[in-house]
Length: 270
Length: 296
Image (tube, rainbow over all chains, first blue to last red; front, side):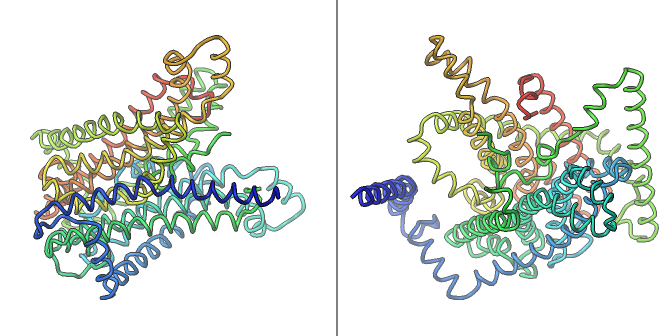
């Protein structure tokens, strides 16, 4: 008896949660649809129904999936570059105060330079293909990785390291068995933040490369796709589809990294 | 139950400048400084300047060597040409002009975002039902980065002043809102109860207890908002504005005047750094009690 009422209660509370979560978004979409129906038929303004149609269309031609995968691949490659350099350098700077003191002024003076500010130089250096986007992504992802690694490594409990040394554990094993696991939470946090900025940076880079190199179509990617929709085919519904995809991918990246944090560090989440 | 800063601002906290909040900057050195005598303190800061100068000298040396090795001044100008370009641009007033255009847009955007996000954050932090209805909309929009709004924004506002401001308001909005909500919600309940026991209710409770307790978290949000907005305005100006620092770097890139491109990149870094410094000073002045909360 009690179980059924409890189940009913939890059921109704779940329904009310769903109701709360969807009410305002659904109302907004309905208002948007109603507003777009008052416009003349040839208006380029996006409307929910046309956005859905554009989405189906873009998926059917395969262009959307291809562009998203291209952007994601670039983000991954740039991120891996940044990971190798950032975590390596971060481990060095975190474990050696002298290296940190000497490199800090340089790092600190590059940090306030927005990644996009380097795009014109990246175009001059690497042309307009994939390379400048990779450079921007790696630059953007580098700082969160580096700073969080430095912080995490320098915060590793000295007593653990000393205890390991007392027991005569060789240095490489101390690094892999003590320092890395202790620094892992900070490094993973840095990786999650870095991946977030990297995804933003690739959109910006592809947009700007598209905007500045004409529609050569050499750069590709979802950012370039948005620019083509804006400048050439004037397809606002397509732009909105791309925006939604950008948001969904960002959300997925964030969720995957959080999941990894849970799985890799069960001791942090009781 | 304190929330960690990264939980409060997951997708937005990643911009390079914002990381200064994660990193306990000067944690140990500060503690050492407090113990030091004035003489030691002066020597310590002298040493720091010396190390910084030495690092910069080494950096410029490496740059110069790379310039000699590369041999193409359009790809990599010598550091002296860049210094000269900065000087020329400063004298002609062009530097100040573009920098002030960008910072004016930044200030307008931050003011607008604060006026919208902070009151909304208070409403959502204090009222559960407002939060339950509005939070889904926020969570749906937040993953879409400000950059992704540029093409649509270009179409709606055209190339001009409105687009960069719009993008910055959008970028600054989320960290401000989320930090305001978490600041308001995590006000120490004992403080509120104590005030209520003493007969403080309504507006005075708000002004005397909740706002001061939430302000440090809001200030952190403000600094995150600035960092995100500064990175976004460069992108927005690069693509869709006829003026500003982001426009200037791309303009001189097309003219292949690389020293001037470098000069403006330096200015972008310097302005960003100075603004962050100013915000930290403001934070200390406005919320001196934040340090005790571990939020400085």
